[in-house]
Image (cartoon, rainbow, N blue to C red; front, top):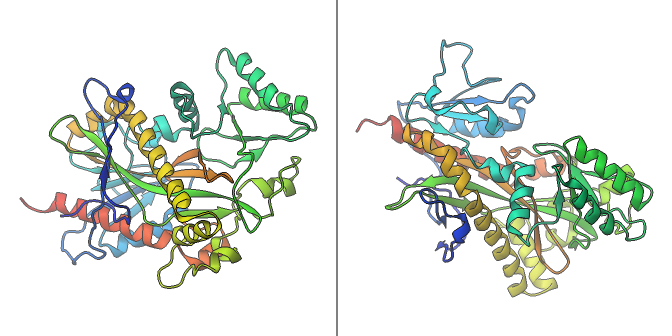
Amino acid sequence: MHLLFSTKFVPYMVGVILHTFIPARGFNAVDFIDVSIPSELSPTEMHPTVRIAHGVHETAEHLELLRESLNGAGLVVTSGESVRDENTAKPSYDVLWVFEPTDMPVANEISPGRLLNHIPGLESITSKTELAKLVQHHHFSFAPETWYWHSGQEGSLRSLEKMLQNGNRLPLLTKSSNHGAVRLVSGNSPQDALGAAADLLKQGQLVQARVAEPLLVDGVAFDLGLYALVRPAPSSGSPALQADLFEDVLLRFCSSPYSAFVDASARAEDAVVVGGNYTSPWEMPSLVATGLGEGGTTARDALQRHLAGRFNSIAASQMWEEMESAVKTLLGAAMPAVHAQATAYLEKGHALFELVRFDFVVDEHLKPWLVEINASPNLRPTSAALAHGGAPFLPLCARLASWMASVAQAAKSPE
């Protein structure tokens, strides 16, 4: 039985493993594999159950498309604030989907052999603060400089102050460590911006340098999300992580044309920050002109064609390769934490996986900058135009549901 995501990428093994990422025992490789799963599963009398625990501060609304896909794949779905079904005395499910990694029960509180949607330890890259620490520690060059509050922060603030001596430009963004909106740091002068940044850091917010010269399509800035299905992989030696990248990407454009010189007004923010009501690829003439939506042309295909025409196909392909390399590097960097925290779950016979989204901003030289990694990424459109197009969420949820059903049904099948 095939157990991995379908992807268009050519399969390859990681050729170089950075020794600083390898614990004495544990996860020591990142493997991108190209295999397929059946798009539809045969009906079965065994109906695995899925519990969606969306937490106190969320609703199951953002997972409604996944829920429908799970039902279509033959799974019985219940949802609520907690991991416990309100109609049963104790947790009863074959698959558990929790919104926040911190909501995952400890290994011995779950009946053995369950499929769980978080990999303990992967928060070392999906937490924005932990990611910033990791990038700083390893001096990764594919992420913009990010500041977070810690002892000795005064030195970091000096580097911030130096950065802000660029006239009245405000190249700083602020975000929370977990989910939340990205905002411009306000201030009428570099010194005001520095003070605002320091206050935000003390409140637990992160401050990140904005990519100064973002790549524009039709004069509009955008970000690009790569969805990856990550899971521990069995191996003859130490266990490894393997990941499969979904074949399409999430392209989100700002709602206003880009301007390099901005203040902190809402209008200016819309020009440099992708908000909830973002513009979809189907509203960008240059992408529509490539055949987007016709004959199976995805947003990734359309962007590749557009960039190949603007630059050249080699440079455009190199951009995707650099993104994949960053994904592999970061998963490798997460392995020590995953090994330390996930082992107890694996020893209980649980199958672990995590759907994450790697968000990039590409600059005008086609260099991708990783800006954050999202655990429990949104699986429904928040843009009206994107909802009309339906991609990439419909095929993503359908594939994910089929994979989850195949694993859960295999676990319930008699030996």
